[in-house]
Length: 78
Image (cartoon, rainbow, N blue to C red; front, side, top):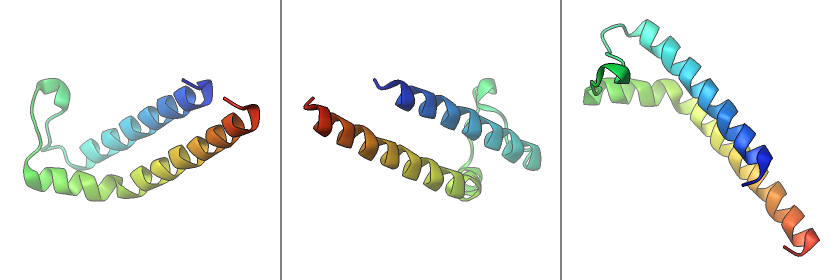
């Protein structure tokens, strides 16, 4: 795997973890996954809405990097 993709995945993981920590702080009734608990459908919907902007940005970043990597591979004949 391309090192840029690995680093992007790591950064995205850190960003999503930090966002979940903020979400959890704003919704203390949600138990962490570490506790083995799962969110209710309502809590899951709240998380989906809360994380939508970050998820969309991360998806766009992954797609842009994939385009760059694909273009480089075409140019080098891989």
